[in-house]
Structure formats: C-alpha cells, structure tokens
Image (cartoon, rainbow, N blue to C red; front, side, top):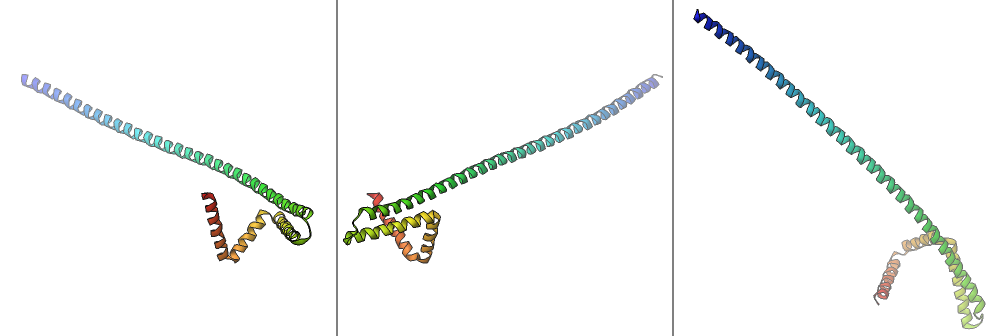
Length: 176
C-alpha cells in the first residue's frame, strides 16, 4: 500500500509538474506573442514618425523654396524697375546733351566772325555740332546703339582696329 501511495503521489506530482510545464510553456508563448506584438507596434510607430518627419521636411523645403522664389521675383522686379528708370534717365540725359550741342552751335554762329578762314572753320564746326546734336537728340541711346552695331557689322576690321587703338590710348592714359 505504501507503494501505491507513493506511486499515486508520484503520479500526482508528475501530473502537477506536467500542468505547470504546460502553463509555463503557454505563458511563455503568450509573452513571446505579446513581445512580438509590441515590437511590431514600435516598428509601425517608428515608420509613422519617419514618414511624418519626411513630410514635415518636404513641406519645410517647399515653403523655403516658395519664399526664396518670392524674394527672387521681388528682387528681379525691383532691378527691372531700377533698370527702366536708369534707362529713362539716360535717354533724358542724351536728349539734353543733344540740345546742348545744338545750343552751342547757335552760340558759335552768333559770337564768331563770319568772314575769313576762322569764320569758315567756325561755321563748319557749328554745322557739325548742330547735326550731331540733332542726331543725338532724335535718335537717343537706342538709335545710336543700333547705328553703331550696324557700322561694326559692315566694317569689322576697321572696327577692331579702332577698338585696339582706343584700348591702347586708355591704357596709356591710366598708366600715367
């Protein structure tokens, strides 16, 4: 009988151990599943955070690009307005120079003798000043630029030689 009791006790302990082992295995499995679920959730949160960070960075870059473009546009508009104003002022100055040359031609005609070699030279100079003044006043910088461009196209070699000579003279004058 003692043997039976020992055997029953052994079977009871063995059954309880089996149940405990099964419960531990089941608990470990559940813990593993819970841990994996936590890892998956953490990964999802990390990806969501990365996506949000990318989205914010792109939005920030887009806004910075827009602000830079707006600044560039305003700068370009201001430069165009300043260029237009400067061009208008240059045209006015050119017209004033032309009018001044015509006025000087009239003054020369009034003040210089009309006879003799001096009179002929003064009259020729007055005519040249008057024609040049009229040309400058009527044509303005745009017309003068167009005429100069056309002259250079028709006479490229003499134009290059004149440019070299002027460069030489300017270099000599600034060196002194």
